[in-house]
Length: 432
Image 1 (cartoon, one colour):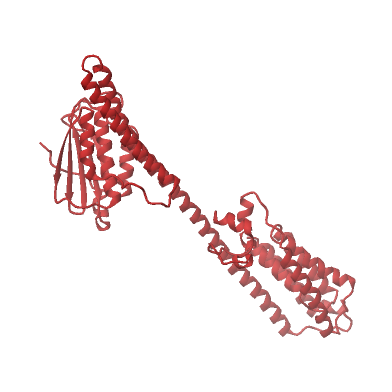
Image 2 (image 1 turned 60 degrees about the vertical axis):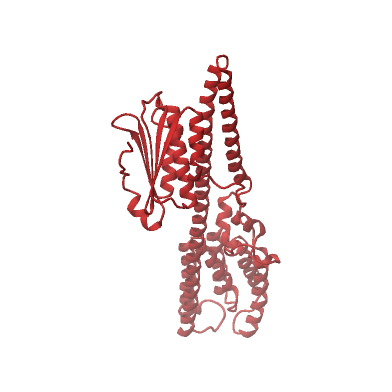
């Protein structure tokens, strides 16, 4: 978005008649590579070229007045001056032809014996544009050729070229010209390096924005999966109970329908909360994110689905960071959902262990597994692992030796304990 706004407005922020709203990434011509990547072409720099053309023509007249020994400016000289300046209109689109064209016009101008003047600014600017665009060989070749020819003319070919009665050039003049050429190349190379750094920074910002978008999309997918999978599993079980008892036990069927209504209402509320964050990403959520303080609600919902859940808490209970609290709640929720969907057991056990700077969770059921997807091979386990990995924690899930299924989770709560706990397996005593 930042690059598109810069491309639409054109030029630096202060040229648009108002205070800068975004970080400036260089003048408009500096970013023409991005425009080309998006399918557009850089605009022609009419203003700067027009100003430079006027300066070259007027400045050459003043230079001619100060150098009466050189050839007088005629129509051919002015044509060379005008051609070299106007070529700069295309310095962004075609930097290589422009740098050779301006060098050629300056070379012919110099060989014809016309006064030294600002025509060399056209060569300097074209070399700068070529080097910044990445065509270093063209700029170095053009400038080196111009310097070599000037050296040959000043110390050898001047005898056969205008103006008449010309003398050999002093070596001090050659040193000054060489110094100017080196300065032009040095400034151009520094600008090229700076531009490449800006290009890398822009690429990194785009990658970071894409990475944040991907992470947010995965987070929303996990939230929706956890909410819908749990609630729909409860609804599915209760719907089956209601259908089976509709005629023989209407009161029990009514209880099942009541559970379905409560579960669907809660699911709609949590889905609405997730969707609200999409519609207004900068606003605070209307309801707090769920945490382990809502564990009794999970137990009650599981009981409505025919599952008896025993909860044990070890260690001093304390407030958890929001991210860890939400992740712990969703892990327990998904584990209980898998018990309802994939286990033949109607009993599960949840252990919450506040051990120092680490929160340990264990969810057990006695099995046996039912169905082809027993063991939770779908998105549920992947979502739990992603939540734990986001906190530098670990998840272990698999069948127990004595039957049933176990989910073990370790969630570090402080930065200093992340390295110690992220890679170690969870080891807790059996809850008998």
